[in-house]
Amino acid sequence: MTIRRIGRKASVLFFTGLWLLFSGCGSQASSNVVPAQKQETVSAQEPAQKQETAAPDAKSAAALTYITAADDFSNLNLDDPSRPVYDRYTLGERRAKGLPTVLPPIAPYEKQQTAYLTFDDGPDEKNTDAILDILKQEGVKATFYVVGRNVNAYPETVRRIFNEGHALGNHSYDHDYDRLYASVDNYLEEMEEADETIYNLIGMRPLITRAPGGRMSHFTEAYDAAVTVNGYVEHDWNVSSADSDPNGPVAQDFIDNIAGQAAMDSAIILMHSSSGHEETVKALPEIIRILRERGYTFGVVTPMTPQPW
Ligand SMILES: [Zn+2]
Image (tube, rainbow, N blue to C red; front, side):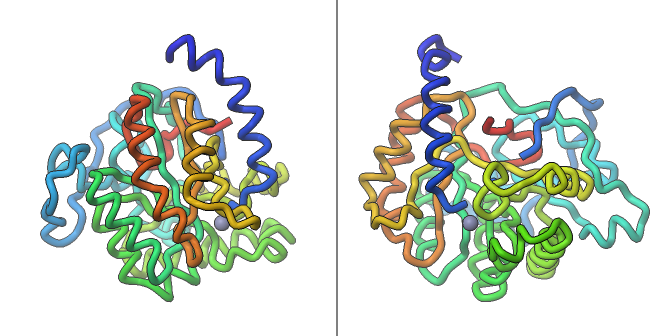
């Protein structure tokens, strides 16, 4: 971390706090290290995507793999942030087999300056694919916090996200704040329903989740506890494009917002890929260019991704 970055961190936190009030869409600090164990690396199914374009960030076929969590979650202290992590079991299967659902402490990844592009609320019929096209062209991996209902509606796009090496995260089944935040039980039901929907499609369950509207805005201690017991890893964000601002912002606004905030070593950037977010698609190439110019490497959110706050 440079001096300049340390100096800017306080103001960045202040402004990003403000963004939380206006942004649509979520944490759990981790520390300590568990004994390193071999990571089970599995190639993405099928003759895993041939690299169609010589993407700058895609180093090798290894960039197109994901990590499968060990039965006891002991293999999640990773050495790079480029590979998504999935569980081969649903929560129901874990409970039935007597396997743990609580993750052990995992050391936050802090080896290099990393930007995590995150896209909430998709997939949709158009913008998510357009974003995937840009990411492929740029050789960048990102994280898609998908809504279960939309997973059912656009399964091919979800398969594409998975097969192209991006991370899928759970963003609830219905994205209905009234229901989700009426009770912890409602929240967990929605999350499990979305889990099952994703699992039925790709045969894997995401460990990463983002609470609709953000944990910081909606969680009580009871929600935090329930999320932890069920092994869900929550991440809000610390950089917001504000692309869900109701006042009709345009691409340049998002670019300016991100350029004004992205100064920390671990930048978790909130955007949306759902219907109506054409301006986000327009902004993405320039956002990637600016982040690269600032020295960021792109990563996907995993249980080792540092908490944004
Ligand atoms: Zn959302």
